[in-house]
Image (cartoon, rainbow, N blue to C red; front, top):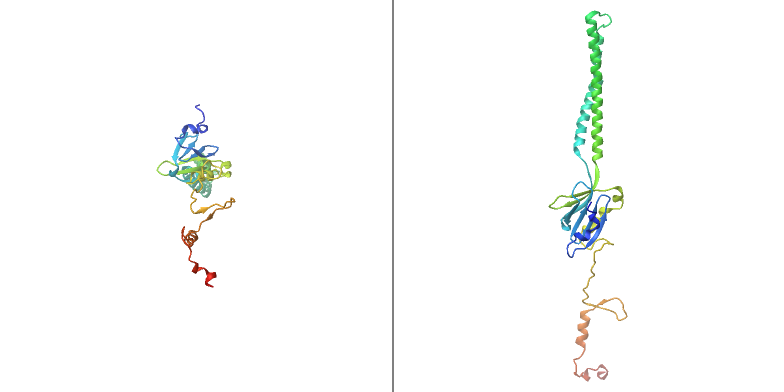
Length: 247
């Protein structure tokens, strides 16, 4: 064994790439970075490691996968079984021999009639047994179909093969697919992730109260009016415009 690569994600990151969220399932591990989605499925049937660019992930969902072949074969065999059983229950070929008096017949003819009656009885039982056997085979196909149904977490990848991993009841109850979808979606990511949320640094048009209060916008119109009412430096005011003397 070479070890568990999901525990050494730092060795797989590019320069400047950082881990944004890690989502652990029972059968897989998803590591979402600021650029990619790293999928580890050690012990699975497919590759142990796959990567996909975050913009190429079209959707994250929980879907039920199954094999349709057992369902088709089970339906066909069930139809045949019902047909054979219907024939076995409707027609009683052994009753044909009842029209002949076997007890009153002696010699070769009597033995032949007894043989025919026995063969017809065996044929009726054989048809009934075939119908029951076909019914059991159909039930086996349906059981196989039910066993093939499984819930899987599916990543729809644009332009490449989709990524599908099994999920358990505990994974569904913990809503792992929701965490993964929020981590892959554009933006800073869900609360608790390692994403850096940058605050709005635009502070134009705001002043801060000297006492540390909240900022308030500056009204440019009032500022222009104050500047117009203030006389320039060195200019003298006209005493005739004084309202007290004119009065």
